Image (cartoon, rainbow over all chains, first blue to last red; front, side, top):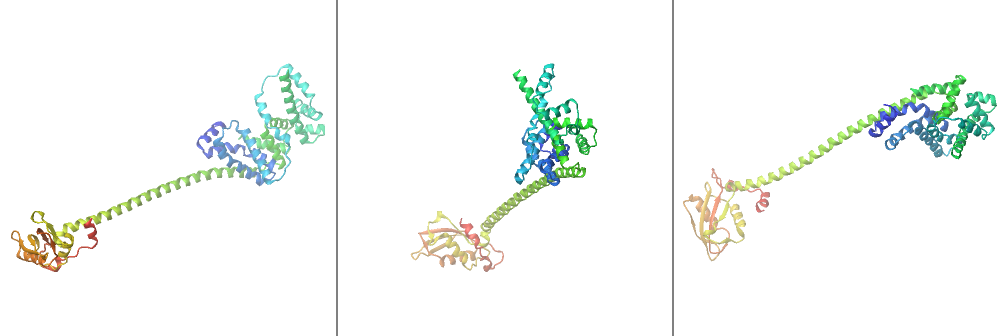
Length: 182
Length: 235
């Protein structure tokens, strides 16, 4: 059974072994996500199990289209709720949390690029700030990894990462605006 | 699975075991896959991938799944037990009802016994209304009871029909027996009537049934009716 069939099977029968099969491939990724927010190995493990417990209920009632991204958002929200419960303030980068909406945009946009799209892209590149322009160019055009970019530019590795993420988003917004405005 | 592959890639990425191209590839994937990006961020915070931790997690999950299946079995058995319990309860009620009806029927039988055995153990009166209208003072029941409380010497017992008139003092006079009853029976009937209760009315005709006894033991014919039977007999 593939993921969709497992989901449907679980929704109709409540067969926990189906949910287990569905969940277990994501556990290592989930653990990483949980650790990112909770920053404690035991708590992260418990969170992974607790999320599973919640799915037992949730997946019987909700129609889930894209399990992977749904699970990602769900687990992230779960961890943020945990932190809020603790009243333990952890710095969460808002850019990272804005990021998830992009996935949907990406998946729907596999259109062919024409010459004027490249021109438009070049125009949009000019709207980015220096860091973003530099990092995006090095990453996407020269296909350099973060580490190389960090070495080349002298920026911190995390700064490189967020510059690329933000630059990518800004480009997308700019491209859409141009397309709509013609 | 795909995921273990991802995990080892994350591991290699964090520990710098990847070529630049591989790193770029993973980074590009992560840009399209925020889930992967978050996981990488997490593992980087943890300074690496702990395979033992993850296999422990897998164990916890499979135990969790098995537990639920076991719980479901346990619940199933609980339902089975409940069903058995309910069946036992129903049986118990049925049994109680049966016992109750048996008891009830038993008393009914016992009262039937009394009526059947009446000719044997009791003196019974049957007023024959074609021969008179007189009634004993106090009613037939009381008269019958009076007869039963007497020492009887009725021989082998049996039926006897007597005719009599009521005198001014209310006692029976001109007592005649019909047919050819046993002498002892006739004498006893006359004695009982003379010494018995007073009557009202002009004349009476009665059939008196004395207990039939093979052996002449008058005291035995005076078998006491079980007291609880009276109520049933009346009703």
